[in-house]
Amino acid sequence: MKKRNSILTALLLCSSMSVSAAVQLSSSRIIFKEGQKEATLTMRNTASNQSFLVQTWLSDVNNNKLTPSPFLLTPPLFKMTQNSSANLRVINSGRQSFAQDKETLFRLNILSIPSQTDAEGAKLVVNNRSIIKFIYRPASLSDHDAALAYQKLQIKTDGKYLTLTNPTPYYVNIGQISLNGARLSANDLSAMGTVPPSGTVTLPYNVTLRNVTLTAIGDRGALLTPRSVQLP
Image (cartoon, rainbow, N blue to C red; front, top):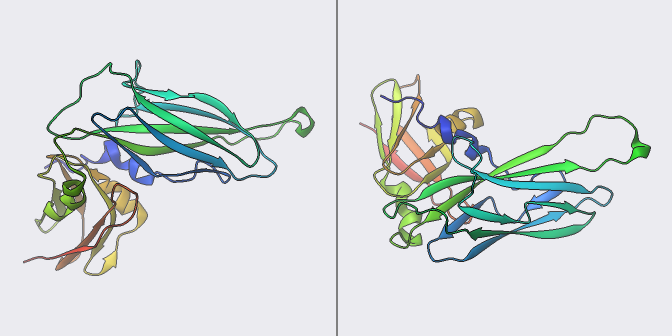
């Protein structure tokens, strides 16, 4: 049994809609559909006294930077002044063919570097990095079925491990899981990560498991209707 299949994608679950305390994103994920020319992510610097240099790039689920990238990010490097907004355009470069029978997952990386003036002198500068999901969805797959994929997860236990198997061609993003009504901690939840198409993730437990309730995250970043399963 593969107990750590989810490690490659676990960090994706920790994505935030905020790149830093001041730079905010319009979405926590991008769904790029086949035939779509481009997608846009809006960023806003809400700080009244701080500018940021923002760098963006695309990587695979193993955090390997994609060079050349199958998608062009423009602008890849730009400055955000106080109380300003900017649009990041994601354009299909046409350099790569994608699987037509399942989704493909990437990581969109956004690095925010606070500005510093000479007058401020030497001080520690903390760079902020955010990672959001970037999913390519072929035309053969529908948004409707993607929203229902978590309902088809096969949930099994063997007395030691809770196993989620995904028979669908969609990535299922787990937002919350409760065992016997007790919600998992953020650390335990991140260990399960995202359930890939035709993939499996597992979680150890040490209670007599009677009920599992899970909630997935939809395309718009919102929690979907909880699904509760009674175990034998």
